[in-house]
Image (tube, rainbow over all chains, first blue to last red):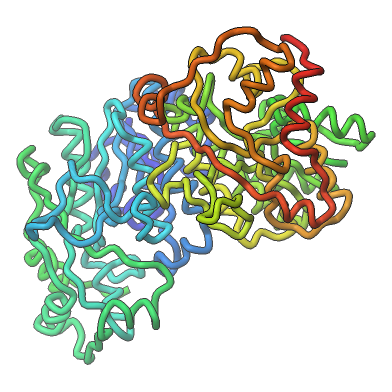
Amino acid sequence: MIVLLGGSGYVGQAFQAELQRRQLEWVSLSRASVDYTSPDVLTDYLRAVKPRFLINAAGYTGRPNVDACEVAKTECLAGNALLPGVIRQACETLGVPWGHVSSGCIYTGCRADGSGFRETDPANFSFRQNNCSFYSGCKALGEELLVDAQKCFVWRLRIPFDERDSSRNYISKLLRYSTLLEATNSLSQLTEFVAACVDCWTMQVPFGIYNLTNPGVVTTSEVVSMIQQTGLSAKEFRFFRDDAEFMQLAARAPRSNCVLDSGKALAAGIRMSTVHDALLRAMKNWVWE
Amino acid sequence: MIVLLGGSGYVGQAFQAELQRRQLEWVSLSRASVDYTSPDVLTDYLRAVKPRFLINAAGYTGRPNVDACEVAKTECLAGNALLPGVIRQACETLGVPWGHVSSGCIYTGCRADGSGFRETDPANFSFRQNNCSFYSGCKALGEELLVDAQKCFVWRLRIPFDERDSSRNYISKLLRYSTLLEATNSLSQLTEFVAACVDCWTMQVPFGIYNLTNPGVVTTSEVVSMIQQTGLSAKEFRFFRDDAEFMQLAARAPRSNCVLDSGKALAAGIRMSTVHDALLRAMKNWVWE
């Protein structure tokens, strides 16, 4: 059996659909039934259940966006920094292999040569750099707690999207925001992301960190062009003049915009379609909420 | 009634002695009986008990010293960064006034003019500066979670000592270490520190941050001279050549050595003896373990 934490969230629901599709037996653990944030409770539960694998899709993302984490710092720290450490302790005590959904938002920009950050590059959008949102700082701290973790995958998700309209979907966000920020990013098509995560386990690739983004990069205006080309929206999109105007008018916390290199996953045999293909497919199969 | 968290620790035991001395009614809460790290459990407990005040003396310090926190990062983050935020939530929900034992180790050095750091100075030995031990980083993050907290005292302790030989006592550490690091520091005589904390509440000084160090500063070699003068030890003390040798030979995490200004507490009517008087008194009344 597989134990899934955070199964009710945007990412967690996609994991449930993927596990269902593969007919893998799993249980989605709710905090109301088992408080898995408590090291003792989680260890006792895992000792009793003896799972083959554990997936941590739990985290605190902030509603309606990451700015909420600047206020709810305790929840953000608990869900994004401490929880991975607690799960590590429980899983290592019992020898349970597991995977943690981390985030590419611990980076900003790209490598000096213009290429994407690799798994060996240290986070550069973090408390350590003092340039980050509280959310990104907590996510980076969460990865710090997993350094040298045994039997552990760290799966980096980056701006998820899929074909279902939702408040967490990047395409939906672009469709709804009154004004957009031009930026260059790597993205993760959600269904492909969770499939890649499960592949890591079923294909027995080496434990460690994996950037699970669709190969390629896109700019905000490119995605807008695709939205217009596919007829998803006929509205006129407006852009902020620059980052400074965005920060002044619309944001509280600085945003991570960054490029990740997903070559390590690819070399391990984990396939994801190119970001442009994935975006077009989502737009063509779009289902309004 | 007063609720005390962390009552079994070095600082917590001093709080118990002080509350006893003042004949204030208190309960020392153990995590085994009530898991106060859980927001729901703590809130339910406080709602039932309705305390007049809460003291948080719980924290993770690492044994035998702060280097242990570089390994036990999850425990350190949980005890020093997250717990204050959890307590804040519970206390603010119920309107319970409280005080948190923080640490001066979120600073290094002194102000540019040579004076001590004041409560309004931002931490400069922290994750944000990327120059700190994991312990100091967590302590600073804990204070960040308490910014604008209601009815909350943040009491900064700094290298505690008293007249009882113990592994947590600064004087005992100097007596036992084979080689010492020369540094300039503010210190807190523990009995005076906890008395000052309780004074903050009984004297109804304004809520907020207070540096609760004994006025004045001392160097390691000054303390060693006092140890020799008072006859506490006749051994020959050796010193590391410099910080670099200390880091190379004896330490894993960088240490905070710093000067704090305790003028705010003094102005509020909170009295502590000078650091030299407090040290001499402890040495003259020394009780071996």
